Image 1 (cartoon, helix red, strand yellow):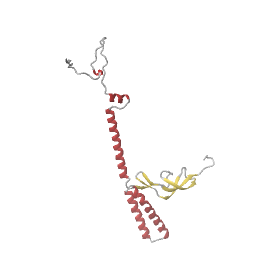
Image 2 (cartoon, one colour):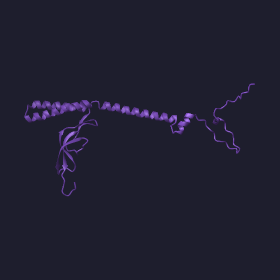
Image 3 (spheres, one colour):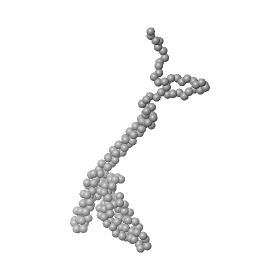
Image 4 (cartoon, one colour):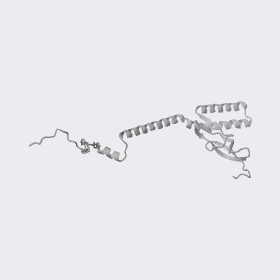
Length: 193
């Protein structure tokens, strides 16, 4: 004998069955069927798929911004190595001008050297290289490298009084610090040091 089959589809999970009213006439809470993997993820505090997508999208956006900034910095500071290589040449040209003027060498030669120095400085300026202001400025260890010092009653704070070698920066990045001599405020007998 064959058994008659019930035409209604059989549910696999009893939680999906339709709720039956309770004897008091109240509707029972509806139970929602939950897949086992999602239930485990929810129990472990894992984010929902939409949250994961949003976090992934935000991470990608941050990555893209970071890469764009790196590319912009790379192009902005591309001439850094060239500028560093040219600074000693400029220093030697300045020394030649200063030395030739002391020796009384022909004025035309000194004038030519001064012109080369000005052109060199203009070329570096086009690359974004600027000199660091030093003489008369308060001593800043991030911009100046002290190679000597002296006490002075004329200053209230450590102040640069002489620049031995000029410092340079490329845009906002320091290429090399200025080598300077610093005047320190003189200690008075009434003040504690």
